Length: 97
Image (cartoon, rainbow, N blue to C red; front, side):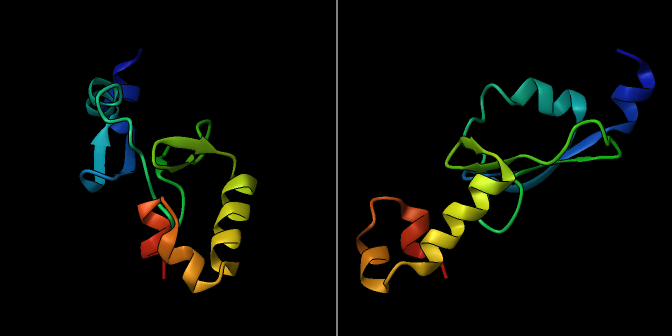
């Protein structure tokens, strides 16, 4: 791994525990096995800055989705009647606005 890659590349992640964080590649690499609950309902939960070879990644409650799958799931939640959202076992669905 080159010094340029380590020093210049950052990732913005969203987790259930800590919300939004901007980490260097080394910080992320040392923490990604511990923090498995990547989660964001309004966009990708992993966004690499200045690294076009690694695209954004979508996660809900730690489970990875393609952008298409993510958008489809969010649309299904938006289309749910409020009464069904309120009794859904997934906390993020119950709190979705």
